[in-house]
Length: 199
Length: 129
Image (cartoon, one colour):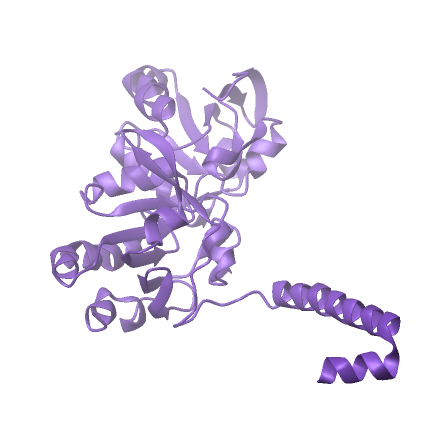
């Protein structure tokens, strides 16, 4: 009825121009707006699927598109600021390694560790912690994933942009639970316990 | 450049010393890990005897370099394994190049003989292997 009213009052040509211009205005400006207000991934959000991680398979860097890992699966993610750094190595990731069997028993398909490092460093770290058979050690080399979910932070001289410490439960690409620390802190927020209690 | 979190100005590292500075594209990458650094670890005693400090540098962070030094026995052999996370040294020496597969700017494989902060001799590998 509104359309008919518009047509009758404004005339078909004006109406067409108005609609087209309005649509164009909205799609341009709202797209720019949404890019500027880059999303910060929260519970209930869909995980951005354009990231491509890198992972060592038989010693060779292999691309792992996010969709391959997350689509249709229940995935637990341990996000860390840096492979081989003290807290990550001694406390954070080990918690997930220890809880691996429990997580699988609760229906989790995969457990992944993501960090802004290269795949060789991630592979070596996985070997060192003896978890590379169980846990997907994923390299987010250019911090693309970290930035796409809005949980990156700048470590400056240490190593540039890194992923904040976090723990996340993703069900078929939708974030069921997420806990993100400020920078490198390690609290219950990013502990595997918070994930176990959500399962 | 940072080494174990402490700022190591090149001045301190190189002043009045004879250094063999070796750059690699990445800690833990195959050639660097299996051939390049190990060859220096084996020859470490010869360098010590000649009063030359061997320094390995890569565009990685300080913790990764520390772990690499330990994993390869380099640190134990007296080799300094240091980090150049922002590729400052790599750029200063003109050996920086982009390696998308590793996530950004890295240093080409090179070896330089540095005496009291002055590069006396330098060899750079053309490729990234």
